[in-house]
Length: 368
Image (cartoon, rainbow, N blue to C red; front, side):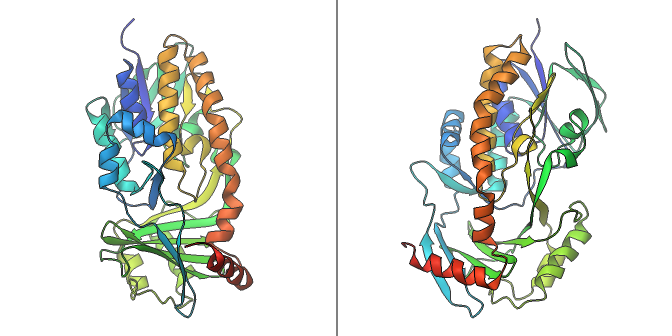
């Protein structure tokens, strides 16, 4: 039998990690990515626990530490400009590291580039699976057949929609939206993440490796349009320009939002499916089990990718058994990470002024 072929949709965190490990196990991976290039935006993310061991085995852990944000302090800033903190929360342990998402994706993609075929600026439009493989139609490339298709294409997964059904059957909106952008200037405090709040709104300034990044998390109803940039800008400005923000890095908030070249916007949602696989099509990362808010998604994506590759290598001629084994091992970990969203929302975006006061009072009592 020839080399087994695997199509991986998505070149974020999970996709390149899976491509690297599949190639090491003797598979022939192809990664297709809708965007013309890797995304340059996004919040800093954590690589911790088992994911650091995955990075070590890939030989990229030193590079992750070189790109680390190195900002362990978090301070809440009141409406009067008074700081509560900084709090030393989530200090990295051992080889754990916080890193800009774009840097993590670039390092993973570089590690996998020599191991896999990458198709940027393309996407899939149809899947037709049978017992022996999957016929795939692309928007631009010629149709091809693969032994397996993996959807590592995020919260709004095309693979999931084609193989499992419409998004509204699996994605649960958590009442929040998130937007991020780079400010193109240094943070006023390079050692502290600063979080400003109004009821139902948070604005975070993160000193990302010398250049400040702004993060917006706010409460809102389901159904806001996440696809159109102009609409995204209007939604953010409608939410934030009604308040004064004592943020030195953002004296020109409307202009910064309207001119940002790397604005990222999406809903804060969870993905839940009774099964991650259907025949020779499976899901990975946020497409299977989006966790949201606490930065665990990248670590889960990396560990899930390694687990999937190991399962496929163990039974290369029996994908059904491989996919069942992957899900049995990884679902427990992913499910446990989905349980903390209410705590995250209460901490980051208190809905009322009373909630804000209570959060700040509690934070003031925590060790620093």
